[in-house]
Image (cartoon, rainbow, N blue to C red; front, side, top):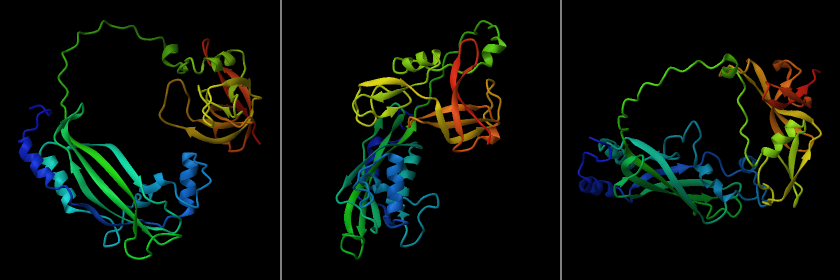
Length: 335
């Protein structure tokens, strides 16, 4: 049997699945923390969102963040989220029909009012719909959509101040429960002719950079022992690595200019694994902040790996790796 054709009556199964529409998927959910400014700031920093409206209100796209239980999950009991028996039964019914795999496909959110620091979030969910049987490249199965209703009370302007609170948004989440397609057995390949082993030097050489039309100018500068970074001609924002458009204003007009080569170690890691023939662990790899305000990943030379420190001043140098490859790296100085 191929998993493109489930070994069940599709009409009978679909009728049983449709009976779960409208039933509770989760109930009694409560946010682990009130809406708060530290979480809003962390979110905005991670997303690069500098909207001045935050953190007086939470970004709308944080809606689901306030409902998550974290690694520990939600506490059990009336104040915690409890997945319903109906939802477990629906998934078990699909498992029994051969739809043992699952993939999240998409989500939709609707925002009714902003959440503000101090708001207390509660939520519940229903099984909104189950699709007819669908055949996809992954396999044959059913799309299951749940709708979470998010409410809030308390806080500044935070609703009625009692009970579950007012509806502030909805979050629809859709999965595909499917029976995976079994790969067809490939014809036995013809034996390949014996290949000569690669020269040792080739097996142990550093990976080559990928050079394309967007970054070719950078590598042309490296060949001239110049570290070139880009600057937007409309807003003057510098950027690295090389990109066709400005991340600040979207302009595609830019110029290249030579960096001074001075910088500091912004962050670093010491690599131990995985081993790779071209490298000799342990070694330090750093994120270097250049004097011009951009950052780039680089080897750190001139100091042992265990002497690299955040804030260490570094200077540009060009390292000849082999006869074909030269790289910009940064040399540090021990304190």
